[in-house]
Image (tube, rainbow, N blue to C red):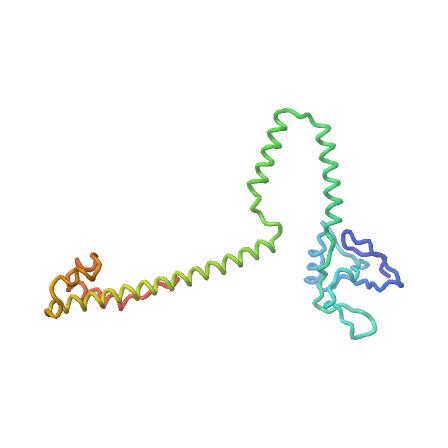
Length: 218
């Protein structure tokens, strides 16, 4: 018969008059390890008579088809109130720090160490609170990189098509000039200086080269 809940900060105890059920830790090693990890209790090893109350499970975790409320095979505890537990731990640590500060002299060396520790905290303020937050950030950055690669590839394709059009237009104008269809000097007015300075033979070489080029795969 369960007596209390193993979750940190949970004061729920067994009472047959209250509609709260208690559930043993799973026997499967993987699921058992996951429950322990979510519990966030340091050096915690659940025993045969270790239970978690139903407060720590979402409604979708329960199988209500029978007479008793049972957990589904893939149910994991996700509802915890770590705030009160952590606050009490913080208060204890603050009291210990105050005692240590009262015992140690406040000299220049202590002031320097306090300043250096504050600087370290400020310099490492970018650190993530937990691995899941870091993983989400990495996935987000990977998606942004993939999107930028696609945009870069599109821009290169547009630039390649525009260059090809310029070369074709330049070849056309210079051929018309060479055949005396357009007056001499027309290319100087309608073509950019970089293209106009090249002879017609160079464009005949450039055009097939532009057709054969393929974009590098990023």
